[in-house]
Length: 479
Image (cartoon, rainbow, N blue to C red; front, side, top):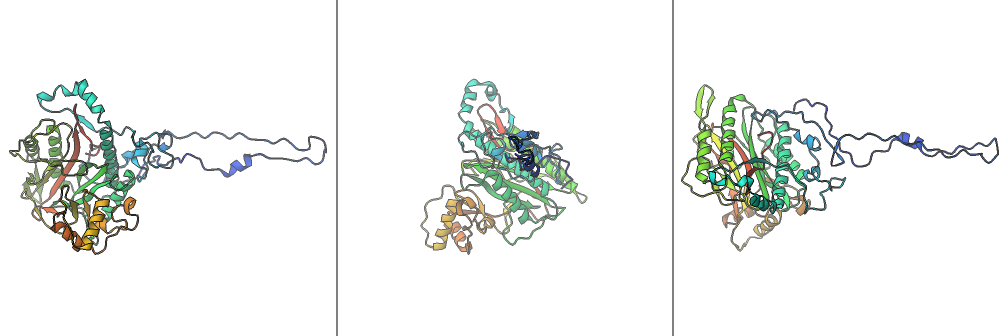
């Protein structure tokens, strides 16, 4: 972490601490025993306390600071600061639930506001116009603006989750450095996510396990307990995590590298994602989005150890639509040219997600599985194994149809303190988990790998196709 400049990071709790000198300013009674007249005792005296000047605050009790720290990772935007959240009154490290940074009726103890039906106005994402001539009227349509006002509650939840994601990932960018254990990194990031979202079971919490896939592993890797993998200077790591409010998931990812020789790979994939975002819109065919991504991404080359590698889009990885409590909502957004004539529709939420590689451009499942998810529309299947019944009950109440990992099952809270307290840890669950997978209730998601020796990169943003425009919800000053 770079040296920090002076910055205000304190939180005023509403009451100032009592000074010892204040006791001397209180009432004093002095007796004069020599005169013996009616004025034997002096009148009580009071000194007026000087009012202390308060620092500039946010919402009356949150002190704003000045962002100043840069991330050690490469290819983040030049104006990005890991502590950008100080400008909103957040602490360093982040500890205040994000809802309280934007809420005027949050109490001074940093608990969530009681009036959850009128959430505060969280920062709006990046606004872009819909492509196609047929959409040119949308941005100025009064009728469509009225339709958007009916969706204010949905937009508030999405922006709330997006701001949490931004603050958590900026904080993570400050401590992700060569030498850190991946399991420590994931737990630190996820604990911050739980704190800022005020984790409360299925109502709000983590959207899915933190992916930290390295080099030729493109996705779906998170360390299981006992995995002591350490991040190295020459690694290329994809960090992918989510936040959800009432099942509305924000899915966003970026690639971490420290060696400048990978810059061209990261730039290719980042620009590919931006091209996909520009191409997306109401009535746009999914094949056109994929073609735009591929055209930009595959115009780049990477030179490694004197050999030049063309950057290839990984053709069997896709972006996807997102539904309530459903990370893969049914539509796939390709990142290569295809014949898919399916169109994007008004109101849909998409994760525009691109992967580039120096390898063959095709991934296969490999390595030990860590990610699992209950199938969204799985049928009722009678279970005969008691442990499988017990594990399924735990999954239903703790994760529902959201993804989870083995590491969470082995936590004392079993993945959610709000739901299970410290009595949720699952023991000897592997046989039960395998049974749930075998009967079609739970789907395993093993790591997805290109050829060994290759390097893969990923960038991803979540957007919503509003009636008047598209809003890139997860956009930040970092990428």
